[in-house]
Image (cartoon, rainbow, N blue to C red; front, side, top):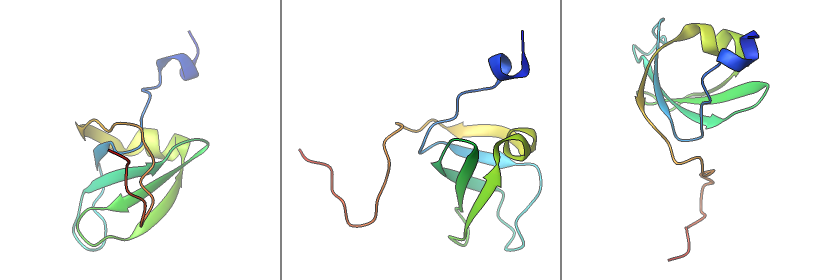
Length: 80
């Protein structure tokens, strides 16, 4: 079994707790993008960062909430 087979499939909208705190004091992040890089948004201050996949997977301490996997774009509303 390779390392790729053991990785947890993270989805857009997941909320994760990272091992190190952000300078604002927050530890919880929302996943905005997945792929070779992960786009994250700090739930404390709103700062957005891009993190390489390997570094992200090593720094995740706990998954707090599962996302639905749907992209959230500003100004777009989901049709009823």
